[in-house]
Image (cartoon, helix red, strand yellow):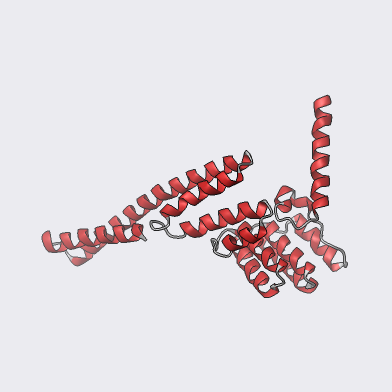
Length: 241
């Protein structure tokens, strides 16, 4: 990556100059080089991350306006920074994959999500669900393990993991995942309720997680339409008042 290369060359040049030119001890010269490396690397990293964040914010605005293709095209512009900063390409892949997934373009989403960022827990959950739909349970579990490692404090990550395990017939493992999730998240109420449901042989209830749950498209379309219809009717009643 260019950031590392430029910072290393600048640090080496400074260290060599102080040691050979100014006659300073190698320890002092080396320390000065290290300080320069750190400062320059952080400066360059902030510069390119700010550019990437700006693109993602612009993409979000386009998504809110339902301009899907424009949102994806905006994100793709970030690939130009991949040679400069570590994990930029992977982060963009996760974002594009998430956009495709939200719009039910699951095949396209899968291609981006599997090349995504290891710390994006939402994208990793979506990837795991794609594996589940392909009957690749082992890969599903591996992706979910990465998701809960990245989002260990996120109750929904654990809940979606358990939901999918129960869906593929691994109820006992789903129970153990919820138990583990409760310890990691500080006894989340929804996790506790779902754990009790599974122990009693009932299905998990995910409505408590709101819209964050519906983005994974694991409920039947009819359930989401019914939810949206109720929301619209509620807004109309408020307007009439």
